Image (cartoon, rainbow, N blue to C red; front, side, top):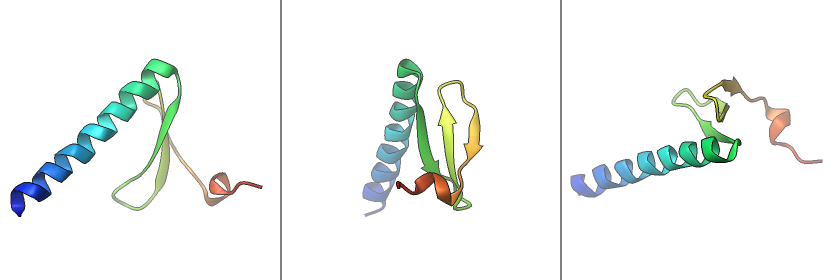
Length: 59
């Protein structure tokens, strides 16, 4: 069971790395939740901005 958990953690990490590469190649950004529970937006240059709740709402 431990190998399955480790494999899943590795897959998640690789997926995040791939998303960062795609964002850099396309000049876009990724959004993710930090370990502290804060949502952040990371642009293709590596700049990280905290997001607030209003940025998630679509009107």
